[in-house]
Image (cartoon, rainbow, N blue to C red; front, side, top):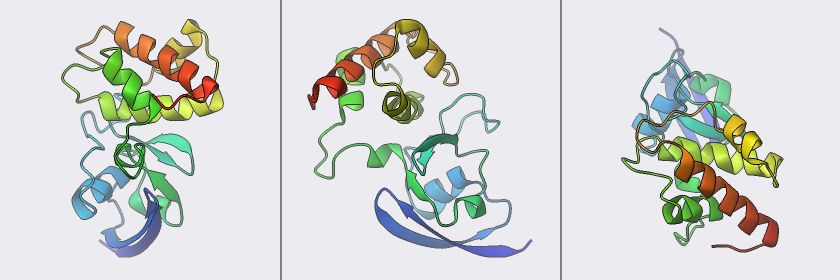
Length: 162
């Protein structure tokens, strides 16, 4: 198998690595960069646990090859909070609205919702449910997640951090 150099910006820091052609972005982030917040579950792009932002767009890191991310800007769940560790409005809302239980799916939801609210800052409940439809949760029943998205949307529109 051939290897390739990749250079990308991850959570604001320039990174580089050497990867085999078939290494997916999730494995590169987890194994090479130690960013284990990007979870792997289905490895088929169905569950959303591995969602990251690539150039501001939510993508399934299990379906994207690391070489495809060469030259891009990637944000993982570790990059969503402020540099001082202050939670983002989305993260804070998930905590306050009990939008998490076991926490395994939470990083993917937080990243997905961050991108969703950037594109749709004032969503209806139906739009929220459609926006999170690609992320699966086995624990919450989704109501806390929907409430968290509503709260985060309100705070982001009003310019409130938390």
